[in-house]
Length: 149
Image (cartoon, rainbow, N blue to C red; front, top):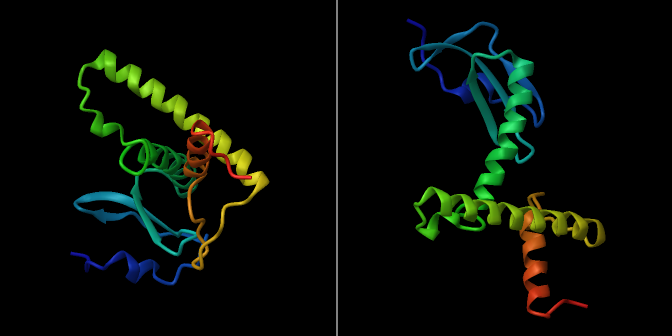
């Protein structure tokens, strides 16, 4: 039986952007997996147990992360689609279509605004809001005819 160690014991010394994997596959909750770890720009340790190679894991996780962020902004952290209470598939499909169009509009305006007036960066190095939020706030002001100078 292999001693159980926490992920930070194996990968605690990783630098931001560095990627490392365990030399051999190991048991993760009873399954033999490859363990790949990296440190995010925010300094968080990200460990992934996978069947894929190290390179494939990095590529797939980056794509997955962008999808996760999109869903998060459609749900509680953004448009709050879950509170609609709609359960009929045809109506839910229409709502999701409209919300995705609104999300894309907010993102495009946010990207445009970022080029004009960059989002303020907080002391810890992260932006004060997402591009989607930036665009959404500007669009809300525009709809109220309350645009800033």
